[in-house]
Image 1 (cartoon, rainbow, N blue to C red):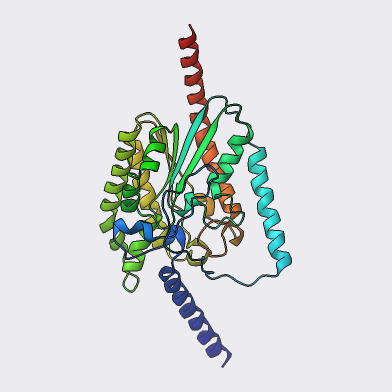
Image 2 (cartoon, rainbow, N blue to C red):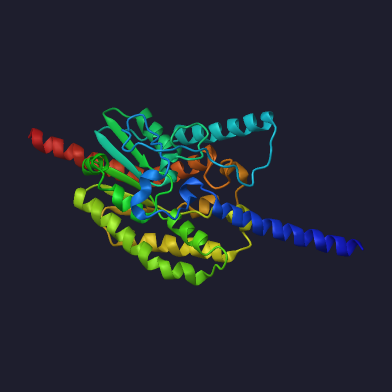
Length: 329
C-alpha cells in the first residue's frame, strides 16, 4: 500500500512540474517574455530605461508588474538577510575593480531586459548599473553610459529600434557597446511549440536568428566603424528547475555558438559568455520571478563583463593619449 501511495505522489509531482513549465512559458517575464505581436509593435512592450543619464526614447502605453513564478514564501528577516548578501557581493565586485577612466569615454548598452536590469531589486540597472558605478568611481575625466535595454526585445525588434534617432545618435558617438539579445527569440519558439516541442523546432529557426544578428552588427557598424562591440551570451533560466532536460542546455549552447561565430566575423568585437555563471547555483542568483537574475546574479554578470571590457578600455585610453600627444607636437 505504501509503495502505491509513493508512486501516486511521484506521478503527481511530475505532473505539477510539467504544468509549472507550461505556466512559465505562458507568462510575460521580461527578457524571456514572448508575444505574438508583429516585429514592429515593440513599443507596446513595457519599457523603463534604467540609467540616470539616459533619455526615455519611447512612451509606454501601459505598465505591468512582474509575476512571481515558482516563488516560495519567505519570512521578512530571511529576505533582509538575502538582500544583505547580495549587496555584499555587489560591493566586492566594485571594490575589486581599480580601472581608472583617464580619457573621455562613451558607452552604450542596448538589448533586452538583461540590459534593462529587470529583476534587480535595487533598481540600479542590473549589470549595467554595476559596471557604470565601478567605472564612475574611478573616472578622472568624463564618463557616460546610456542604457537602451527594453524588456521583451527579440532580434527583429532590436533591428527596428536601431533606427530610433536617440539610439542611432548614441551609437554613432560610442566608444564601447554592450549588447544582450537572443533569449526572447528562443522563448518565442518555446511558446509557439509548447504543446509539441522538438529540438528540430530550434534548429529550423537558427538561421533566422543568425541572419538577424549579423544584420544587427552590420547596422551598428554602418553607424560606428570603430567602437568595440561586446555581445553578452545567453544563460539557461530553466536550469535550476529543469536541469534534467538536456535539450534545453543544448539549445542554449547552440545559440551561444551562433553568437560566437557572428562575433568572430567582425573586427573590434568579442563574445562574453555567461552560461556557466548560472550553472550549479542556488535561487539567490535569481529574482522573484525565477527567470531574471537577482542583484547577486547581475553582480556575477557585471564581474564577467568587466573582465572582458577592461583590456579594451585600457587600449582605447592608450590610443587616445597617443592621439593627444601627436596633436600637441
